[in-house]
Length: 211
View (cartoon, rainbow, N blue to C red):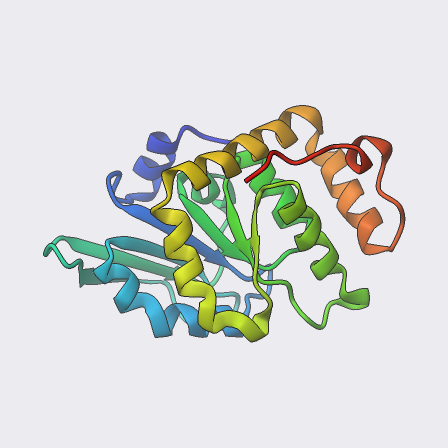
């Protein structure tokens, strides 16, 4: 997967270049709780001028585009699709991703230098998504919210989207992670943590930038 310049990615997707964009993904099978969160908050996010692109998962709805209005009257669109092969453009275009915490997804976030709010799947084997997510957070790539705390998710999303300093720090940390580790190494590190193994030396002694 290749990271694209933000404007190029947005042009490919047909996303408004001036509005904030949140991409929501639930892994290869989608995530019912995240899909429901999108539906419950779509209109209020649009009111704040936030576009949403949700990959719902196979069998969890059809591809469609809806239009809402921001408080200033501007048209704000929301996209949903059951599956995508455009993860690179989506993550490159996004201001923020809301997702589960599979190792592959986290490696893609690092590659695209895209901040995320992670909601680990609570029933993953050995709770490995929780370990993945906490490692990502400790490295300064974003935030973690447990599935039981989804009532706080919208405020966390807005706080990151409209705090340029915080978003910039997350991106700086992700850029550092991408430069210091190949994607394959990051995946291996995350999988080692999920197995309860001690992370490699360069991660054990690698301080995340202070936020």
